[in-house]
Length: 122
Image (cartoon, rainbow, N blue to C red):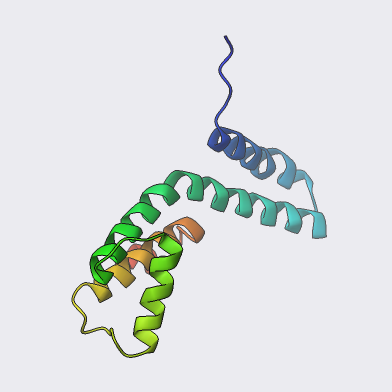
């Protein structure tokens, strides 16, 4: 039986090809678009690797903050409404920590080399 490569492996191999083989031979607009494609594949790879754990932790924090379970989308929507309506704020126990951790997780997927992320993780 032949094992199939995982989606993450496929994405990483295509990104590696673009960065190491294709981009050095490209110029101008085509090189720019190859860099954009490689960056997009990097985001997809990190989302596949880090996203499930990050979303699970975010959902658990939200359920604790709000006092009930729901989908991640439902819980985030309710949190936004409570903040907008003044029912929750930075003085709410756990809210600042939740917002900080959620932001760090999202930046780690989208822009892991962002200097502010390294500083925040110290």
